[in-house]
Length: 182
Length: 182
DNA sequence: CCATCCTGTCAACAATTGTTGATAAAGACC
DNA sequence: GGTCTTTATCAACAATTGTTGACAGGATGG
Image 1 (cartoon, helix red, strand yellow):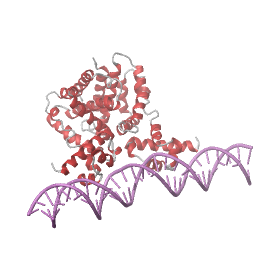
Image 2 (image 1 turned 180 degrees about the horizontal axis):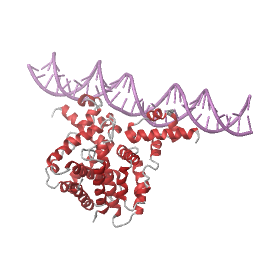
Image 3 (image 1 turned 90 degrees about the horizontal axis):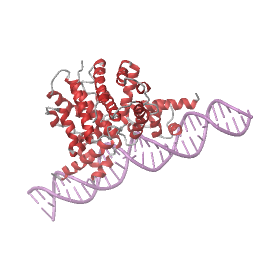
Image 4 (image 1 turned 45 degrees about the horizontal axis):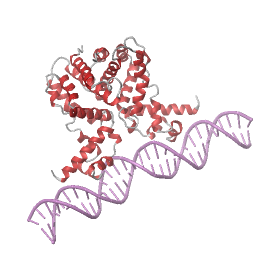
């Protein structure tokens, strides 16, 4: 790994941490550069600009092969909460969606990445009547529940133990995938 | 209504339109003042500052008496989609949540307003075992589904007809309220 | 040693941000 | 009509934004 690659990586890590947590519009390039220990000008040099740097943090963000190839998708989602490392990563992703999905400048990047990396591969794998609607509701429950728990923080989900939460989430995910649509 | 009240109202309307759509961090006070046909300085004079202006747009935003006093809450939520005026207002509120819930400066205001105006009154009205968790999941489904449909725009929910969507949403809301948690 | 390329530093830029204070215009009241 | 209060205008402020170009240090290869 060359020196430039290292700098690129440091910038990318710092950018992910900042953008994902506080949202694209609330982060300045000088924040990122400072916490990466490099000069601001290198952002434009190595990535081309702020938007491109944000876009780079989305590479593989929604890549989730275990879920796509799973025989029982709800089980895979719920199992995430038993592995601390996976759980933390998942919460970070949920926070990223919450912080950037509605941004006029980068919201479309988030939507495109989610659709290309996750939704479409998963839809291609699954089959069945009205599967698009059922899968969309599956995603809706997953995002809605985790966001209510981790971002909004409504008492009831945030106060529940991980086991209780996993059980309730599992119930809802099953209902979503099995939901009749017509 | 005095002239000042009119100006205040014009500012508030313009602020709601801008903040709710594009998010607090992406809106400048000059944008709002211009589209209200008013000078920028009047924002600080009449509201005290940008944050206070945003906070003012949240007054009564989550007030939803029909739902709180309803015998069948899911039915009330779903019925919203048959009344165009109500539906538009609801979509605007969902977009507002998506655009501001994770903002470091005003996210806590959104969370507090939702909890005080909607969640707590509703929880006080309802009763039953583990009702906080069930109500939180109810909110999670409502927000998750509408956000997936109106903000993320995943094919499956956005392509569904209003009738299909209402039926599927109804099914999920019932499941959420009835879900066993332990 | 010299030349060339990679990498980083620094200063400056135009634009935009929220906020403030002085000043002018307009309306109400006697 | 003169006076006082309300309302609006304007200019300026310090700070921050993303981006660029000129320059320097250091490594690499001849």
